[in-house]
Image 1 (cartoon, rainbow, N blue to C red):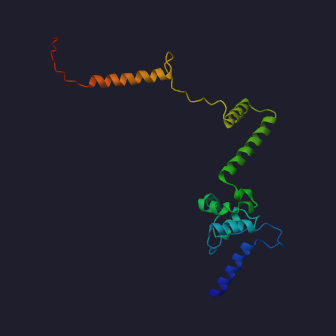
Image 2 (cartoon, rainbow, N blue to C red; image 1 turned 90 degrees about the horizontal axis):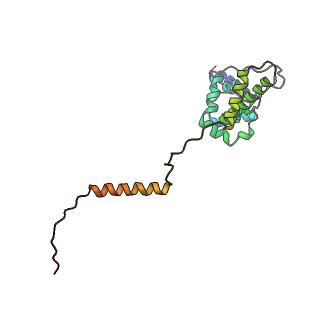
Image 3 (spheres, rainbow, N blue to C red; image 1 turned 180 degrees about the vertical axis):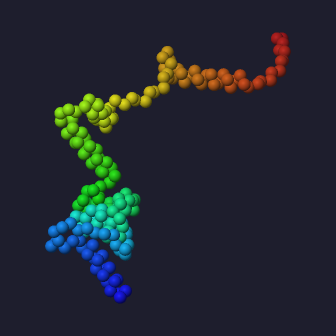
Length: 188
């Protein structure tokens, strides 16, 4: 009985790895398994390469996890290291994209939607002003440059340094005590 259950679990896991049968016309709904293949970053990458049509749900189910788990795995350093060597083999950019690539994509999409809104009629002034502000910030324009320290206008920097050195030497000399003995010298 135990042997039969184990065989059925292995067959089910193999079916998950192999993907849906071509004769199936409806999308495959994969539920998390009670017992599944242990996760390693390399196995996840291999599943992504072998099954380019799989999304978060199917990948998570292959490891007996919930779809939200896939997002955490994709963000992990260990997974990103395993993926780096084979990133070009993964067909779905939503699975293989780095965080920087994801945010660039998000910014491009947001800019596209905003551009479509701005091209439409009845756009409020507030939307136009906010779009202009975002564009200016994205280009790095309109930012105040850090102010340089102000030097006295009547001196150049070398004169200023010389005065500071002389003042420091005077202060040091005034702090020094010198004992003097009076000696009378006769002219003969």
